[in-house]
Image (cartoon, rainbow, N blue to C red):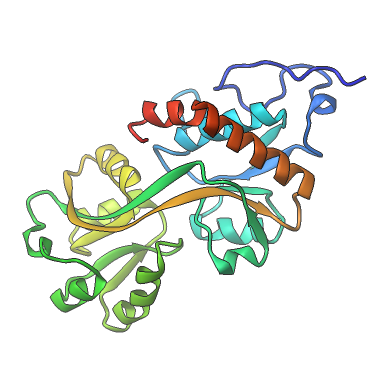
Length: 260
């Protein structure tokens, strides 16, 4: 007879609270989570524990499913899709669904929305007030600071080669690096997840403001490697996500971070 799953608070690292917890887990194995510091979604707190909105949402879903997890070693953001697609890590959080990624991965139900903005130094964005797309930004001729990895919508993907060809792109790996580049004048605007940009700017002590144009607002998901995650585990966690959304549990966690 199977023992009952352990009960533990949201902040506990992994769902292993007693001897034999592995045997009680509903999933086929302990699933590994691809990780890269990305406040306020995924980061280490003052005690060195994993924290953030995506971490709390993921923990709630794993508890509901009765599954266990561990965080994989940190990797650069542009390698996260690669490691999951190859089955070196099982799950990527906050993944945008795309046809290219679906070749090697599956996507669970959406668990929050991501808003992507362009920001500049406070008081220096007047020139971009009428911009309504990347073609407008290209005509203005200012350099843009852009992440070197990620899916930010079809309009961005279509415009990026033209911006690169025009010499209007400076790419960065980590968001704090991008904020420092903005402060140093390496580019006029910086693009990334809205909440993450403002969190990084606060950490760096840089005053910024967003221009009116929103790059995209789209759902994000857990992305599961086809190579390393069983259909059983994929379905179990997907069903848990839908139950928690229906009961309002995920919405309560999102509201604590100022999101719907």
